[in-house]
Image 1 (tube, rainbow, N blue to C red):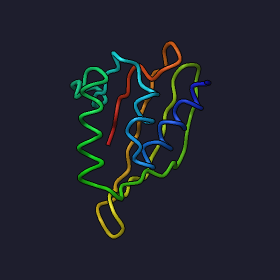
Image 2: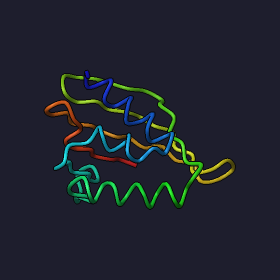
Image 3: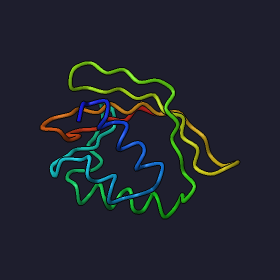
Length: 110
């Protein structure tokens, strides 16, 4: 898969709240961090736990792709996130670093 296909595949799985499919896009040692800040999740088990809790808390959560930039093995997604119809809405930027055919790191700006 290309970096763009990986980013889109994980976004599709995220929107379907299919945790098993979502996790197939992430490396076992993937890191999730706040942009220019602390690491919030280290490793696939921690990422699985984070998103299982989020999917349970926000079962109607969806992220719409506003814009995507792909440069080599880096994908930058600008997303419009809606927790639930009529619920919290916010914009986020996800910067995916691809290595070995998987997402190796995600840095979030919000």
